[in-house]
Length: 143
Image 1 (cartoon, rainbow, N blue to C red):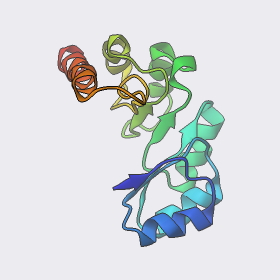
Image 2: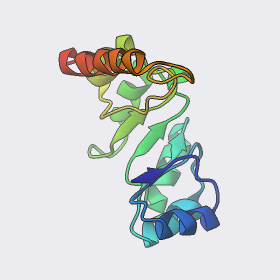
Image 3: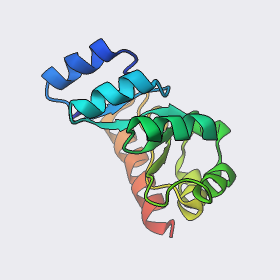
Image 4: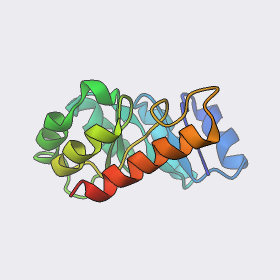
């Protein structure tokens, strides 16, 4: 279980108390990252620049949420892979569609955060299932 859009250290305390094992944020606040790491949570802060990426990793991030994904395409993932520590997990989030899975994976993405392309309010279970199947199929065909 995890929590997203975690912005403050006090929020980390609340999610840890609720049993969360993972924290995701739209930004890379070193104080929040260090606090979550001290509590034993996996931490995926949002980054959009190399500076933010290295600050987040230095603070203890488990991996990086490339956000917004639609602005950080496969070319960015490929370039970042050339300078980041090799074991750094990269997860584009925002604007990820089944059609973008292959190019991102071939560039070095480890996974994705998927929201509105998978679920929209009012969507039927069948619509959600078809969207999920499209993502799974794209993942399988990506490499």
